Length: 76
Image 1 (cartoon, rainbow, N blue to C red):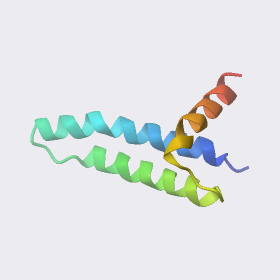
Image 2 (cartoon, helix red, strand yellow; image 1 turned 30 degrees about the vertical axis):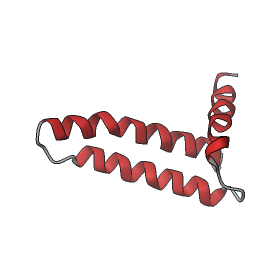
Image 3 (cartoon, rainbow, N blue to C red; image 1 turned 30 degrees about the horizontal axis):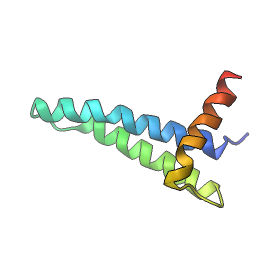
């Protein structure tokens, strides 16, 4: 069973957004942002996989449509 590339892309974007508070917290406490770096690498990997699996790719204009489509599939 393979995952939908749109779902992988949305998960990657959400993981990337979750890395921001960790990054800010690490810099504000003068720590090494290890957890943030790991989350950013995971997000980049997921987004790269999604882009490689979708032949047409993603553009900035289609990202809101992708999020809407994925969330409507989840909550339907």
